[in-house]
Length: 121
Image 1 (cartoon, rainbow, N blue to C red):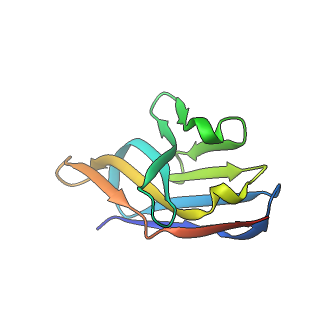
Image 2 (tube, rainbow, N blue to C red; image 1 turned 90 degrees about the vertical axis):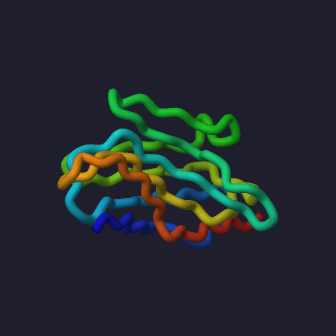
Image 3 (cartoon, rainbow, N blue to C red; image 1 turned 30 degrees about the vertical axis):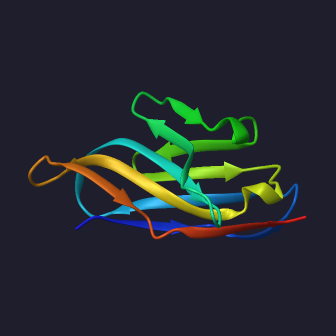
């Protein structure tokens, strides 16, 4: 059984920083991509940043230059460093893992439980 363990959300003033982390718990064969999505009240879930194999990172235009995604393959963990936070960054942030299962080499797609990020003005 694979689970995603998220941490790092909280309340911060505009201009501040937060770092989110998401660890894959359980036995896996490999990771194809790990990323972060967010959902603000009344809005659809949107991509924030994704880290794919080969070290490539893609970002939403709204966070480019402020957020950095990184991955520690030894720890099966992805991080999202969020700087220069704005009130419009307020949302529940969800981790997503896409990979390969250890036992049957099946494709996996899991979501974290979500962590609240609130940026006050």
